[in-house]
Length: 131
Image (tube, rainbow, N blue to C red; front, side):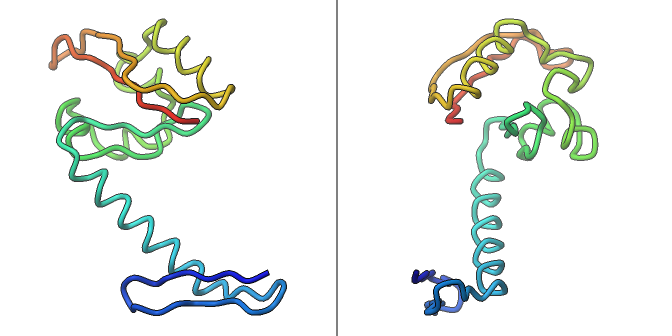
């Protein structure tokens, strides 16, 4: 097996020549760079964005989410969706949708429900999920 990966910052190609010889430091560095680039994209989105794990716990959110919902990282990351804030996201229709989509590895784009969030007012919750 050969593994080749481009390190965009250094402009180098890291290549593994052996069947199981992968330089873990190179792979870690490439994964870290990809993560930083992805987080940079998430952070620049102007709409509030919350990223959920398969068990529906928050794993990432952008600055617009924290501003809009007057919260912070410590109060968000690792918390189940339905426990965020004062349970404002405990929307039965949204829960049914997410619980149906995630286990079936289905893709759904443009699904939305509207909820009334304290301090924010009525706001749509959109799902663009690919599990």
